[in-house]
Length: 397
Length: 231
Image 1 (cartoon, chains in turn blue, purple):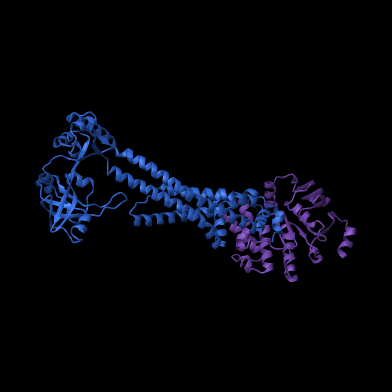
Image 2: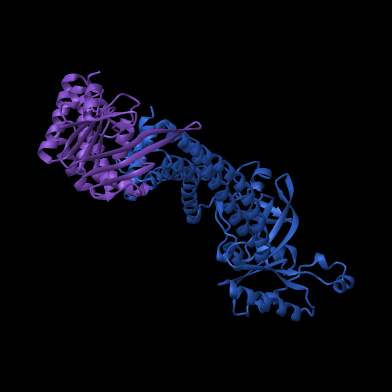
């Protein structure tokens, strides 16, 4: 007797008790669905945390951590920007580096008409725009000539539009940043995602920023390379180069966000595992429901089993029939559960601004696992069916 | 063809051993039409289960078509039931969710017959019992006589050597009973199938060439059995 034959038989007997089959499946649907939701949201969250921490595509941040001696020699060292113009030019010579993203930030008072606010004012180079994917919701972004010419233009964050301009469109208005007039050319999109929060920010081309603040040093430098291997050697070379140039031992370092992200990934994975196991319990309970109903079904169909045995079915064939039936039940439940989990995870991520990831491994795992549940929890009822005495069963009313 | 040699079947009832079949020896030749009669509790159902390979004897030998099946495993007995024996029951025992055609196909599924051939042979069997226009009906939509015809079609579809009928007319009116018994006579006459009918109606037994009387787990001698039948 072929598998297909058994499958068709199982489907027809499940169809005969539609309501019961659906209710039994519900346990599996919810169980598989819950596991999929947890795993999808967990993996999505992990991926999101990683990209937010490491930043987009193969970058490392350079870090200046002065030694105790340096701090004793210059107590104001933390107030100074650690990266000089010549540092950047020297870094540009390292062949592995694709681009250098440099910026400098200072808190400044910003005024529009009568309103003033304390704002973080950041001077950026052109690579910064590209790497951080700065998108404007109104107006335009910086052009190359803005950077080269040091034009007095700026981008403001969404919060500034709300606080300083009371929600009116600020594009084309002139504000003063540290008493220097700046024309607003665009408003940045509201940041989305878990770790980003909107703050009062103004971005200026670095040339402009430097004339306002009279400093050509950078507070932040990020290196980008093509591959992670190149990035590693670029980071090492950069740190060595800067330590040589500044005559420091080990003050310039590479902040390896990958490692931190891996640590955080570990935490989210453990969280996912814990919540997933709780969801797995409901799957287990669903499996017990299947076993229960299959036991009822075997009792109800005692006569059918007797007839089949009289007609030449072996005990093995009866066992297989009921195993495939419970497996079909849980398999259909599992597939529906995957859709439920996928749908719910998509809805959750839509409203939470949180990506959900459904990998094919999870889907395959869900299918296989629900089949396994069908076999495991179908074993007892199927075994009971196959052990029936044909003579007794034929007499069963 | 069928040869029972000192068959005994003992059941443990409480602490007591009860001999349901007591040293029965019996021979049925190929092509015979035999009726087994006896009062309820006489052991005739157990005898039929024994002949039908649904039950194993406690002692004695059962030889079916030259094979000693008394020590066969359950799987081997299932094969013998499937290939050599066709069952017809008083309560028809059709699967209610399957159409007449699918019910008839059932024994061939366990015989491993291909789908196409199964359908062909099931149609042929239903034709033979005169139900070619009822093939797609569910058992519920059939009359008692029609149900029993489906059961007969199912019994003959694997071309067994023996048909075992347990009170085949017990649930039917007398007119339908006659038609069903005619069907058995036809199968016996035309195809040479050995037919064994368990019954307590003498009208049914009258179709047989030979009647075996069972009482208290033993086969009664013809002289004594005649008296038993007239009781």
